[in-house]
Each structure stands twice: as structure tokens, then as C-alpha cells.
Length: 129
Length: 370
Image 1: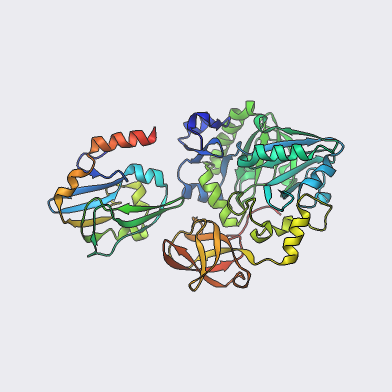
Image 2: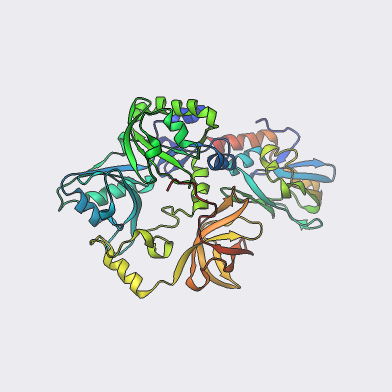
């Protein structure tokens, strides 16, 4: 699957879409493929302050459980309530309807340290080898 | 685990690739963990029909005049009740009662049997059987390499398989086997499985792997047959409360505390480990084995603690999301006084206490043909 060019990535397979001071966060297509069928997503409270790389939530799949780490610091402004009843959206549309959290960025400069699409592609090529 | 180059492959490897399986290392083998996805595959077996490659399982052939007396010494269950063509689920234990493996014993006749053992233990099991066979007139052979094994599981298993064999399958009872020709291939066909559905396990020469598999896929289309990976094999067996070596069964735990007392016949002829197991039983068991059904959202997993209030009273040996129940289920051992069905406990999941009810497995009704 093509990696979207407008996103940044963490080495832990989260993606972040930065739009001004706001950002949307989810897990990558590669991550959902590794997890297998997602059955439950635990998301933070709206209003919570998170630090970059702090655990933001939890994804439970049939076979394993994994933390979701915040790609950047900020305040949670929204969570994807649809995942409550349709956690499988993380599998079927990881970069779209499977989004997880929106935050208001504390320090947009932080995202400069994240992986661009090409760097992230290199990483997953290595992990799949 | 070794790197992927040194993994063993089953004779169905190229078919798995063709079917888009995700392959993973398992017990030294490269095995399909899933094709379409664990939940879809699981429900396909429960509602329709699934085909599993289980060629990683080990086979041991036991032949000779001393075969029956040798096996009775080796296994914990009562070999004496077996008849020709019957199958027995059992354990074999060390002298100290630790479990070497759980296995199926198939009896051709009193002088000839074959054992089906776990992939992860196959070499160890063969060594164990071989070294204990010294005093018996018996030949023990590891036939794993010359055996392919498929499991066909689901309500329409008989209807499909009957299209490929003249043998009268309707007459076959659960835990019985026959020698029959399937797709012009000599096979051992047993009415067994690890899913809780009706179905068959089929053993045959790996040279015939492709034609047999393709015939099942082809004729299976009208039954909505799907290939099923090890992921769903695990969730299916958990819903039935079936033990898995390495989870429920280990060499360092008492099988009596893991729900396996029913295959340990302390009054049958002497077997290796009997004295140790009898002592354990006479001393009394602190824990009992049970199923747990989560009453709120969450996915329990092996080694999670079972709590009564704040107090740890047991541990899960397996846990998963149950696709049939759409909720969390687990198997584990807990203090005997809290182990009766209906009892309320909780499971500690990532520092949260999730309420759970003790149940007696299976979690869903079994469809096996009694």
C-alpha cells in the first residue's frame, strides 16, 4: 500500500497529519496489518494533555495488544467515537475513517523530528525483510 | 526462534502463498497464521467450513507385539478401553508428573498404533518414546516427515469429504478413524479436530499434498469453504476450553490443576508419573481450572492475574477476544473456592480490574458428532 505523502510518522507506526496548529493521529496501514483484526480501541479523554511519545491509548486486536504513542505533545480536542462500535475501521481505512485522536499542538516544531514518508517506507521495508 | 531460512515448510507452502496467507514462524515451521483475517475465518468454521494445514503436527508410529503394553506404560489415560479404529486423547508424563506432551493415540490393532503429537514437542516426544521402549518388543518410528495432515472442520465437513471418497463417512463416530482413499490417495481419516465443530483430520503422503488440497478447495466452493490459519485455530480451541501445550499444559505444572484429570486414570495399569500424580491428588489441589467470561469490554491474555477484590487468586493460561461471543474470554486456574461456575472475580488487564464470571467451558455449544 502506498504511504500517504502528506503525513509524518513515528518509528512505532503512528501517523500524524499536521494542519496549522492542529493534528490528526492514527496508526499506519503497516501497523494494522501486523496487529490483525482490531477488536477494541481505548482512547484518551478529550482535554487531556499529552507529551510527545507518551502512551495515548491502546489497540487490542485478536492476537495482541499495543500502545498508541503520541507523535507530538498537545491537548486532545477530539477522539473518533465511531471506533467504539466499529474498531475494524482501523483495519479497513487506517489513514481515513480509522483515525483515532485530534490534538492541538503545543509545539509544532516537535514534528520536525518525525519520519517523512520516504524514511518511514525505508523502515517498514527493513521490518518486513 | 531461528531465522526464516531455517524454518521447515509444509508440503502446502506454495498453495498458502497463492492463497495470500500471512506466514509466521511457529514451533520451527513456517505456518499460515491467517488468510482473510482471524475473525472472518473463525466464523467461517463455526457457520460453514474451514480447511487447515496442520502438517506441522508430529506423528510417531508404534508397532510390534509389545505395542499395547509399551503405550500403557507411556500414557496417563486407559489404553485398555481402546478398540481397533478408535482414538484416545491422553497425556504422557515424566516420573515427577510433569507433562511431556498431550497427544492422540490411534489404534490400528493391538500391535500397531500411531500417535499425533504437538509440533513444538515432536522431537522431544520421539526421544522420550524411544528411550522408554527399550524393554518392549516394539519399533518406534518418527514418521512426521512422511506425513501431511489437513483438518476439515465445520458443519458440512462430512458432505464435502463424501464427494471425494467412497468410504461411508456417516457411519464414523467422533474419535474414530478409518483407512480410506480420498481423491485416489490412501489416507487415514479421523473424526477429530481442535475446533469444537464436526470434522475430520486427514493424514497422507506429502507427495499427494497439492491434488488433495486443491480438490478440497474446488469441491468446497459450494460449501463456502475457506482456508483457515493458526490464528483462528487458537481462538476456536479457546472457545471450546481445549488445552494447548505451552499454555494450559507445561512440564512444570500439575495437569490435575489444569482441567486434565479426566485423562489421568490413576487406577489403570501403571504408567510413568502415576505415583507423583497420585501424591498430588492425595495432597489435595489448591487450584481449579475454569473458563472466565469478561462482563465488560477488554481482551484477557495469558499470564494476566485473576483477582478476588484486591487479592490475586489465580492466573490465565490463555485468553482472547471470542468472535462468537463478541467479548473477552479466558482459561486459567484459580483458588478452588472461587472456581465454581457463576462465581464473580476480576481479571487484571493493564492495571485495570475488569469483572468476569467463572464458567465451565465450552463457551459456545459444541457441534462434534457424539
